Image 1: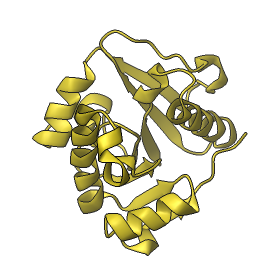
Image 2: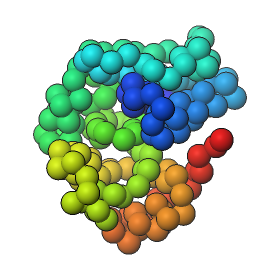
Image 3: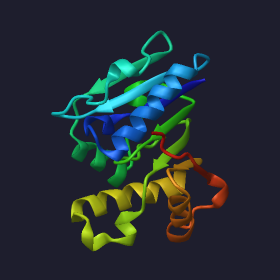
Length: 177
C-alpha cells in the first residue's frame, strides 16, 4: 500500500501541530516497513523544521518537496478544489491531510487530522484569515474524508456536534509525549 502524508506543517517548529505530525510520521516510518510512504512538503520560504533525521527515510519512504506558498494551495485546494494531490506525488492508496489545506484526490481514500474546532467555537479570538481558511478546509473534510483522526475525545465530540460528522468516521489518536 502507498500512503501519502502532507507534512507541510513541519515548517512551523515547536507548534502542537508540527510536534503531533512529526511524531506521527516518525512513528509510522520507523515501525511500518510493509507500506510505502510519500511525504508531501510545500512552503515558499520555510524548510522542514522537525528533525527529518528522525523520520526513517529509505527505500519505502520519500519526501517530495515543493516551493509553493500556502496561499496558492489554499486557492487551488480549499477554494477551487482542483489539482489532485496525485499530480504532485503520484498515485497513492491513502492520503492523510493535516492542518491547512485539503487537496482533492483522484482515487485515494482520504483521512485527515483534526486538532480542534477553535475557528467555530471562538472565531472572534482567531485571525480572520485563519478562520476562513480552516472553515473552507473543514467543509471538504466533511464531504470527502473517509476517516478523521481527532487528537482528543473533546475534539471528536466537537466534530460530531459542530460539523455533523458521523461518529463512525472519527478515531481518537492522542498525542504522545
